[in-house]
Structure formats: structure tokens, C-alpha cells
Image 1: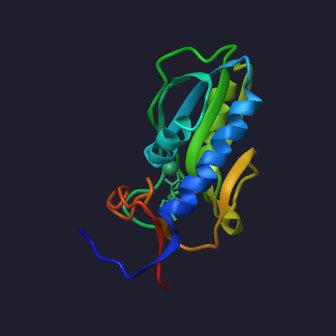
Image 2: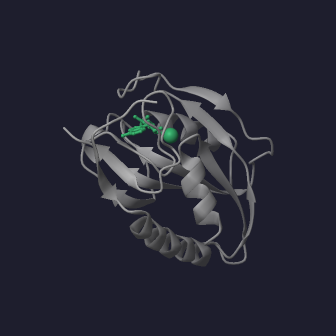
Length: 175
Ligand code: IMP
Ligand code: MG
């Protein structure tokens, strides 16, 4: 596995506090409704698994997968679907959960796909927002942390080659 010179950007404790707060807020938004939570794989899996356990609601979990990064730290700009949901989304309240919005290409692609299935509503929550690198306009309803234009990994986000998703903290590679 590769070694990197990193610094802690966001601690596990800080993440946990914000995720709890978001879970409570989302629970209030869907009172009396049933929800389909869709983690966007692979990066959204860790965030989503903590988030759903902070949500006091009737909900189902479906998975969707997209890939745009190959082995480097720059997006190829090309998004492909790697996994699709198994239940119909028509008429359902959908909450899409993603690790990070960077250029916005991945979320724009997945949101368009989900909207084409005519859900009753679609809300998107992301853990991290790297706004400085946005290339397309994309609707993000909740951002947990805004971060500078640095390569980060941990808490579900991978380093090149697909490692380090299991780190509890989010770290940034030193410039
Ligand atoms: P976008 O399509 O450029 O918005 O990129 C979104 C995807 O790229 C995310 O789902 C992440 O998987 C990945 N990504 C973007 N920035 C980072 C980063 O700093 N570390 C790890 N993965 C990243
Ligand atoms: Mg991702």
C-alpha cells in the first residue's frame, strides 16, 4: 500500500457530531413519509451507514454505483454506472448520499438518472464539498463540510488505488 505525507483535516469525533445533527434534521424533514436512502458507491457507503443510524424514520436502503476516477487523483471527466438500484423509484422519496462533490459530474449524472424514474422527491446530501473545482451546476441540498481544493481520503473516500477508505478521520495529502 502507498504511504502519503498527510495531515488530519476532519476528526472522527467532529464527523460523528455533524452526522448526528444531520440525521436528526433529515428525520424531521420526512415525518410520516417512507424514504429510500441511496448511498452512492463506493465513497458514500461509510457516511451513509452512520447517517441512517442517526435517522428515526421508516426507510429502505438501495445502492447505486458510479465511477469516474481511475487510479489517479484527477477525474477522467467520464462517469459510468457500476451498479443500479434494484427497486423502482417511481413515486418514492429518495435521499441520495454521496461522499464528496468535486467537479459535480458524478452527481449530475446520477441525479439525472434518478429523476428520469420520476421519484416523489429527490434530495442530495454530501459529506464534503470542494466547491473550487466545480465544472457543472449541480443541486446539493445539504453539505456537511466545505473543504479547500486538496486531495483527501478516509471515512469512505479512497486514496489512489482504492485504499484508506477505512480511516476514521479525513486526512489531506500535504502539498
Ligand atoms: P466529481 O464527479 O468530480 O464531483 O467527483 C466525485 C467523485 O470523485 C467522488 O464521488 C469521489 O469518489 C471522487 N473524489 C473527488 N475528490 C476526491 C478526493 O479528494 N479524494 C477522494 N476521492 C475524491
Ligand atoms: Mg464517490
